[in-house]
Amino acid sequence: MAVKKILRIGHPLLLGQSAPVTAFDAAALDTLVDDLLDTMKSRGGVGISAPQIGVSRRVIVFGAANSQRYPDMRPMPITVLINPEIEQTDNEIESDWEGCLSIPGMRGLVPRYRYIRYHGFDRRGKEIKQEAEGFHARVIQHELDHLDGILYPQRIENMCMFGFEQELNEYWR
Ligand code: NI
Image 1 (tube, protein in one colour):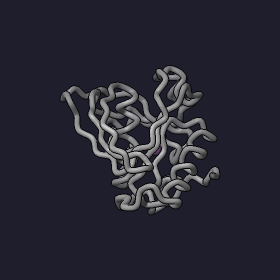
Image 2: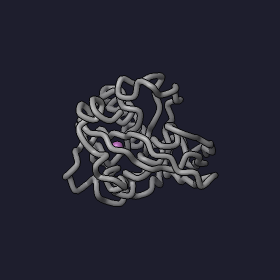
Image 3: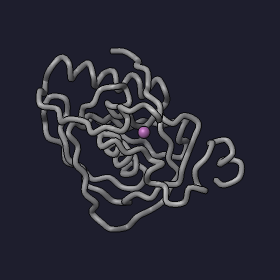
């Protein structure tokens, strides 16, 4: 278990496609999952993906009881999701402010599906099937994007709605 350095935008590993996990219930996977949980918690994040700590594997973790980074969020159970898949259960799209531990100090207004169903596995290989909505669904879509090399600025429709958190809080939020 360790807090890892988080790669920042500009690092090529953040732009790659991550490979599926094939060995469950394994020491290497346990280490990766624990590192992700420790690193996310240490930074007050609500989600993180394996490529952000330099491991190109399809593993994400998300959730927090509360977050300094997102004070308005409702509690979200801490979840480890391996080889995740998502589908929208409704076509409604909503835009909201998003940040990323790999893009410190910045926020952008990003459109995402409001209602999703997600599927994947826990670290022992047990299947997980759940639904999520709103900010919870947003976080999962954001983390899944990381596994395909997509960072949230690529999803912003109006680049005027991208900037430093401090200025956005002062003038826009
Ligand atoms: Ni991110």
